[in-house]
Image (tube, rainbow, N blue to C red; front, side, top):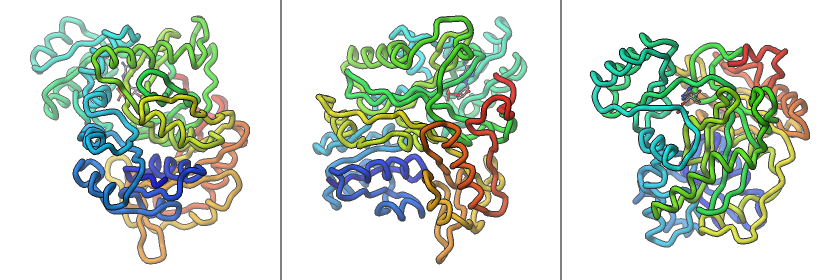
Length: 429
Ligand code: AMP
Ligand code: GLY
């Protein structure tokens, strides 16, 4: 089978590597990919969010299956276009992907489906929003409605900051959602679904702040690990829920809601959870795998993901296997100088080859390009360095040993990814 993975980041690189392990896969193409995906798969230039361009690529390559990495192609209707041509593709339709593409839609879906989430209001008018905040002063989380490439959410500490956030986000969009600010630990629960049934990935945790100790700016994610052993620390006296019980609250009701709307949801569904007062609230849905969660989830899984991916795309898991995920993995993101505000491109990267040779290590590329024989930085998050093994400790040691091999000017990374709290993960939120 010839498979095309749409996208160009470390998530797509990890998907490509996982698919390449499958006995049923003869070739993996990443479109457009990056300088490191080219080491493990074939790169083909393509605008992944252009449905016509993707269809032409599939036809030209005679590909058998397409896996969509990022959200932009989903919301641009790539899946719908390929469906119309009978091309098997893994990802939700444009309408179903609105669970990620519109915060207002997503919150309405959660409430109608009976999913626990922060109380919210939607505003189409700045003055009405500010008036509401004045009457009900609090710390709000303010969210622009549309896709904002991760920049549309402001978590405020008080009402003054909340009002400033509303002004900022109304300037960027037409509709704004404000919601109660929750407090608690976060976790990423990701399912693969055929529309009815679902399979769970291990629970993962993303480290969003730029600097060690959860300091500095919010980023797209500076690292991740899995599995997260949820315990009393998350549930704060409430009953501790298993992964399956969490999915019954956070995943199953939304899939049923989609079916009731006659818009079944197929593909990956990511629930961002926060344990406020020990209760798992859904902060958001993503219509795709997480980045950097994917880099750890697929590295920790042993076995062939293709049969379940392909079956989900066809709307019926039937009896396809779901690989064992008993391993652990830790991902450390190496970011460019100036990230996240103004990442510098063009710095020469040394040591990628040596890092890739370390045992239990995978190095996935994102903002990385070729300059002659050398690799150079070409984006904010440059590399995802993953260690995997039987335990988090082993995986963590392997990841950081591989990080030691790599150097480029201005390289930024956190030293506390997956660290136990005593090693300075910072105060719990
Ligand atoms: P979102 O894109 O909606 O997941 O928001 C991005 C990040 O903002 C989340 O991962 C949380 O860290 C934070 N966040 C979102 N909603 C809330 C909330 N209601 N309370 C506290 N933090 C939130
Ligand atoms: N790691 C969070 C995301 O992929 O949106």
